[in-house]
Image (tube, rainbow, N blue to C red; front, side, top):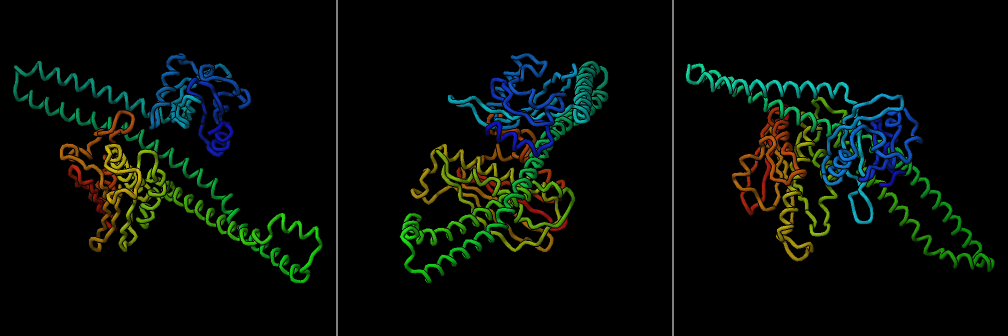
Length: 454
């Protein structure tokens, strides 16, 4: 992404965004950043991040390096110097747009947020966690001191300590889930904004293609009439006909219009899938076609299904049944499909690296695949089954899949919350069931059961 493309992209977003290099050079900003700093956007040209914040250069470089090497959003904090002499503490979310290479430095997108109401909530939450942690420590100390005096009191203190420890764990999980929910909300807003901006011009193009094609056919018909009436035109016209290869042009222009129509329809389908996946306007229970959510998620993940480098193409097999519309939280179910399908792709990629498949799909019949089956259990329940043919999961790992913070992925590639949140959405929010069946070497199967009317 170039700074010019960034400006076009960021112009429609209300959030303060900066595009910086891994060396701290400010490459581009949008207007909300200039408003925060009490500056004009032109005055930010040529600036570095070191000139705009109070943190040390070493701390900033470390943060930018963390952003450059992480595939996930990297949280941080920066204190901005405003033009009127004040400071403004902002929470930052950094993501690498262009990874570092020997030819060019990394490009990092920084999202700034004034730490007002959100920060106060996090501060209060952290204070509460600290207070409870201190309380737990006090209770443990009291347990040691009173152990010799009264066995009954020891048991009561231990029970209280356990309850406080569980509360502390729940608050820590809630804190992490708040961050995760905020990231999903930001992603949803960005996706919806991009889909809206793309939809307007592509609708205009698609609408005018029909008229352009009709006008072109009318002109070609007029040329045909001229050729019929004047079969022997002047030499100058004959030379021009040969120069432009009129016969080929007449045949090819129809194919060009057909190709353009197919292309615009494809873009419209992608935009529809983006808007359907974000579902920002569907926070309430409503009746939806669950297949639309699955298809939209597959459209979002399509780039990961294609063959690339050492990874062969992943085949998706759909066996959809005749499902009724179900009453649910559509956006949350889409998040469940995203988590499970993304994990299946990760498992298949890991299998590919182990040498199980060839990157040439023609060399083996046992190619990586994901199978999605939907069916009606009875008049009150439906079932979605997502199966992959990866390396599978052993019993020790499978028993902890839905535990918060449990992950088998390297640091920086997984939070251990995806399946935990998915379990909460299916079981607690929808009153359904989520289970996993797997064994080493035989892939994994996730079964989602959801009531038609939660």
